[in-house]
Length: 515
Image 1 (cartoon, rainbow, N blue to C red):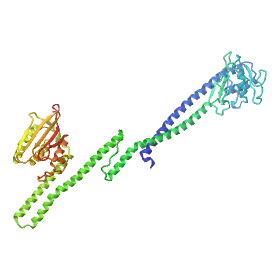
Image 2 (image 1 turned 60 degrees about the vertical axis):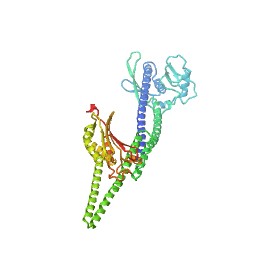
Image 3 (image 1 turned 180 degrees about the vertical axis):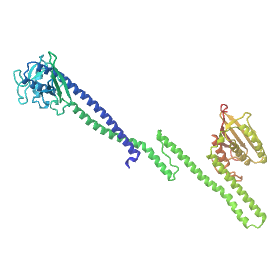
């Protein structure tokens, strides 16, 4: 489906957010404008109602003829652009101007007439308005056409009611639905004469609201399209490293373990890419090590199995008891070699995979090496070697498994004794510097060729000068696994063949405040 990808869903999310924001802003804006113009309409009708009620009170309480009031009501309705209705105290309709759109008055003539008298300081009086059916007539105070009472503070560009005669409001079909009522009081006695109701006033705000709504709709559509486009662009930038990482994982799934992500950014995707590369490197190293392990194991097993099968075949056809006993002895030797190889493999796997709880035990290396000195001295003596030991007088504490640490040191001492000719020297030293304890096993043996140093701690790796010596090539791998499990490291130094070697184990010590 189209919306199953992150790219399309992110674009859609941007568009939805933009649409929601536009709707909220539009609704709030239109509501504010509508409230504003509603208040304007109310103020407009209320102001005109007060003014017209004062004029009507003068008409009703004065000597104005009844037949003259209706034209004046129509004139007031035209000038205020409202429908003016006059009611008596019982609610009976007395006068009704009708809709301001239906009043037959020439707007241009009214404007000219108002402009001519704008600068005259006149009291309230009757002035003439020319009807539409005779637009060419000249306004005159003697003419007996419709007469409208006009307030003395008329403005040139607008009526005293706030209606601009130069605008199109007078002919607008959009009218307000509000109705404002104002009581009519006798200006002399203050008695209530009735009420004036103004309705169908100008509603210029509807045009503005309609324009704002149209502009808002257009702006919203543009904003949604821009947001969708921006979301598509951003989603491509975001999904590009994911797609690249997906391609790398696909190649790895097909067997290309050397594939790596091209990491350039420093953001979260860059961190993900670097983490993936580290994981891929670890997987590749694990797979490569496993393959090498299988190949080396098969190679190591092939020799004893071949010898064992050959001895069994020869023993089956051999009639001489002495020869048969020799074949049996060789077979037992091969079986013991297989058993030792199997034990070392199991121990190595356990050391690499199992976090032993005894590694939290605090032990004294000085005491441990002192206790093993007699064993090491006896082993060196049996090999015709000189054993030396240099231990500090103060204890050196570490947090470790005593059995595993002893086994690592034993393996190094065994190798030193095995690869050192008679009359040679094997020496063990222990020292502490800062927060590190260093155990060194130094011998004057056959040494290690420079080409073998990088792989000396790998499984089944044996130096090219050790073919004449027995071994499986797992002893140093076990030493490294033990030391690594204890947060330490092991290193080797050799000056070349026939010049001896030095293996050093460094482990973190336990500070006095931790005891």
